[in-house]
Length: 552
Image (cartoon, rainbow, N blue to C red; front, side, top):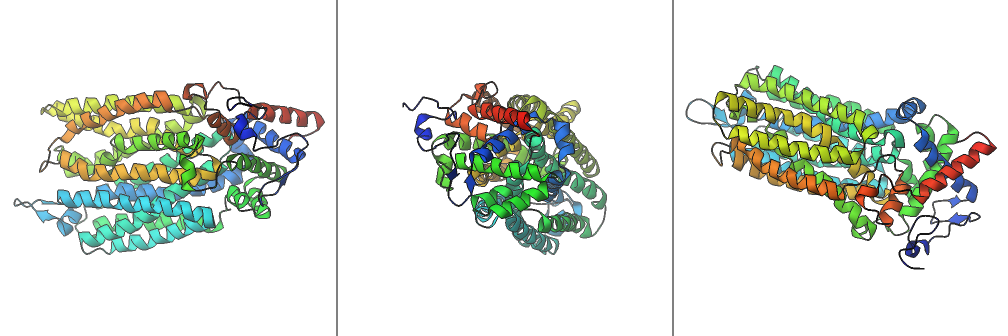
């Protein structure tokens, strides 16, 4: 056999030499259980069943599974709230008066250096949190790792709340972002792991929507409390995180562990129990156990589970695409927009009161964009949405830069409008699609590690922009103001080209099919039309079970 010949499993000959998949085979792989020919057929059949179900049918079929996905999405609100509050609190008058310096005319401000530190330094601990979470979830499971992260979050909020200096406030925020990095990694990986095929992109994309809800609530609170003449004007916003975190912690205590973790570690009975807590029909739970076994045995043929595996063979391409799409977050200007909040409007000569009102409107646009993406992603596809998102952001940011090149009232108004519209355009295209792609692209055995690499790279560049953007934007530094749009617009032009060349369509593809597509080095533009052997076998197994009796 040559390396390019495809066998009946749709994998290259060199890979097939490692796998015996004859119809009568009864295989034992590691301590993950025996997969008989009948079990294998059932696993393939449930994959076809996933293909056949519509979006609406899936939502009605398994309400328990949707509930546990909802717990993950609620947990991510904590991350969004902290991110949104971080930049907005710097614009609260009592916070500036408490921790800032007076400019000689009675106006208090937080220095550029402290703005950079508060915006940038926590991203470093967020990177560490993502990597620790990846290690913890592999060793102990998603549930204990998430519970530990949430406990750290609750403690760190107390440090921020009781801060008596900017140094103490920064320390609390850095500890908090350690937990938030873990939460983002684990929640995204869990949702990608358990979400049904028909709603997978919508469910993963909801991870982005959840992070839009937090800043929206924070913006409303700050608009109300910023008028208070006491430290509670900013402390109450920080304390609100305890409410979100407390509810999330209760849900995490009772959540079922991801079945794939138990299968990987050989605890088959525990995997079956988790599936029975997710699926209403016990037959479905049994069939999905076989599906997970099939997916993992394919994924683990060439993976030892180490980070180095993310950069070997077909996994290298998957990792690089995941890094690229996540990197488009900070490179689009998200870190700049998210870190500044209402403060950017104030620097564009908008009054304090008006800036808080516009900030609320901006978060409404964020949620609207994420909702549209939620409805479109499983219908239209990831690839076209991502390409359109990059292109739209390129045009929007260049328009903002053009408006910022003039000083008239109309030009300032236009620059504010473009800056505000970023929230909608980003979330309807890039924002939600990034999570779907980064969650679906990795092989099952390496998902949390691949996400840790992607999220860490994104946070590293977010850190860079957190330090660099104030030096470019602020009046006491580069004084680019809205002209900073030229920088981000030019970068997104490059990403639009990269998206067209390298981002594949993952819609309606099971993880076994994606493994085959990457192993066979199918070009990105052909992912949608390529007929995999995995889906052919799934269709045959499903048809065979239809003839002999009720399906799975």
